[in-house]
Image (cartoon, rainbow, N blue to C red):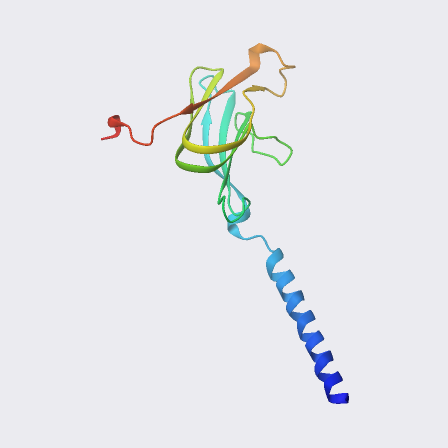
Length: 149
């Protein structure tokens, strides 16, 4: 009877150690869970940056990368408090940003699933006036373009 009790207690200890090891090993942040800045495009007047970031591993097994687009004052890094103007997943094969004048940003894509889209952004000191606003447009592009030959 004492032998069974020892085996039972040893099994509990081993199970607890395995559970602790799995919890510690799984809580670290791998390199693919950080948000990485992929592209930064400055507006023609030099006041605003459009920033494309990619977050790996955050979307689960079926999503892969999360793609976010931010608008920030020129040269300002992205902070955790900022809300992206676009959140997308399942992006392939193209995803890009291009300014069309001072107040219009075109975000081009071939294939994507958008979970968030905000078409107007106001600068931090604009008080929602039209002088400092940026309009954002989604533009679908074909995967193959004859001009790319």
